Length: 352
Image (cartoon, rainbow, N blue to C red):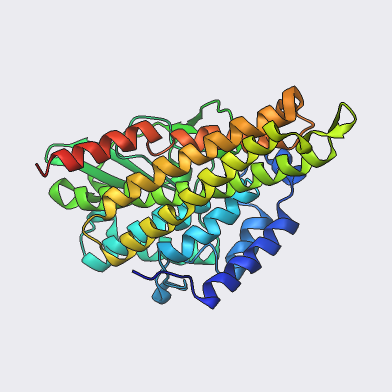
């Protein structure tokens, strides 16, 4: 199989990279620590570029693109530790709502999906999506979200519910990275909020979990790349024994090892995105491999970067801690590397 991104996809990525380099500096991320917000002028800028509505169908004002297009942008979001919910809104909520609308599977609340998709494309709505594997766990992005997509156990199996964020009390949950806006919604399942239930819900929830694994993996790639680059630059400037520490072979090996893991993980994530977009029979396995490899690569980049920086790397004044905290949070989100390896093993054994 030959796989390569198109010139258009790469140009779009480069444009987003330039915008984020200007609009999302480490100082901007620090400001988001002090006052986390679901939607900001930066989100409006991304919406104007078409990023927010990337996966929204064209009929609702979006670009109608897929996960292959999104992973490049999610990687750029990780590169700057973007505090806005790009993955949750554009990577998960929009495709889920679009799939439900296309299949006609939505329940009582289905008539609201069109307006929700319109609002996503316009940059007027951000969503938070519960992990189907942990429906009662705190939901990333729930605090301040305009739309909550939550999961409950119903009489006929799992149920997906869509609720207006403003109508649901959300208790904030402390997080290592406050920009993730973790929260626990106080809600009661209702027939009026059901989007899909029972046997019809399972494939949509499974697809959402797979998309989440791949998109989060792409964000981890960007975080790893940023940490290795920052550490390499620091190693060139930091002097020890009258020489830059980057001249020492041990430091070179640390950074090179982290870079190798990153370069091996990147095509795995890209390939998993392609598999999901094309409906490959083993797409779910590919998603698990992608999340496991990306989590490993980012965790190693974080470990090495902190070692190269020393204790200063975790101080508020050093930008590195912003990337460390996001990495440690996302490495566990939507299934850890251990979780996904176990899932992959179960899938393989089931075929015996």
